[in-house]
Length: 397
Image (cartoon, rainbow, N blue to C red; front, side, top):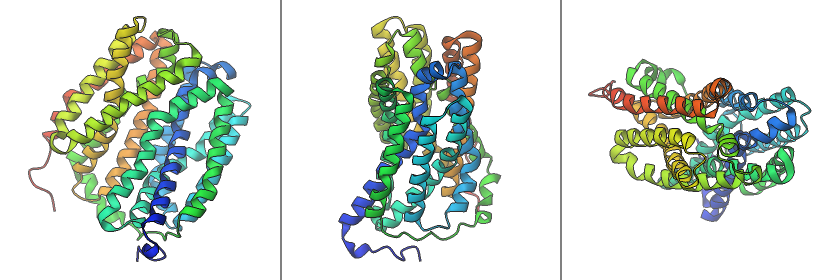
């Protein structure tokens, strides 16, 4: 039933273009989520609010994803995919345009809510559609291609947004996002075939997932890891500008370097995760703690600061795939649901981290935020083998 209306006899080229279109859509959609990180200093100055208050836009977006994601995905999964993706692109174009025109902080808050509710829909349904567009033997590779768009947005969407923000203003950055979202519509219509909704998932058959203490412990560990990561990372642009003395016009290029170094972490995580999942998690949590804390203390010393940022960037990026794979491997059933729940936990952590980081900055500055993040991620390094010790000796039936 899942292959209905998808013509696999159209040769591989049309499918390749469809995957490419989904990859670009993933980049635009996830950039919409994280672009705000690089725009915080400029946005706070323009709207007359503190950087900590501006950072709560990250909290709002992440909490909306965490709470609305599973329900929105279940609700919208009944619709034909091409039409759904086109409507989503239109919604992102309108909301990014509304953000660009927002006259106040609260208007910007409203403009960010709808995209936040739709991001996890694309993460879930987009990867499913990629699998439907490919043969069974190449489905995993197709999904990986789509997630390259997600990775590219995480690594380069934020610095590109910062560069645009400094060149044409933060409102101009949102206008560019609106134009890119609008440009996705004809590409999706031309490149994607009609893709029917997949078979309905019976969540009742996956309820045993919530009975596993091992799975829940891994989910909690992801929440803690992402809280620590984003307690500091949300305010990286501010750290560069205020503590590191980087001119506002150059912050985007520094973030670009941070993302480029992060590709090393992505590569290392992929090499280590299959055979050394636990050790890799401990290693990169430890490196992240070292990088974040040391960066805040050596910000005025150029070479040590660059070295600390490199360690931070490598570890930060590595923990994204490591956390996702660790949680999915902890599930003995309902792997798709496990992956969705980890995305919700990660985004709850992103929001909580932005909230706690903003509180720390308000009470003791960026150094306190980085120190707190380092302590928490160090605790996660210690907790990882303890969580692993709860792994069942045999899979429950």
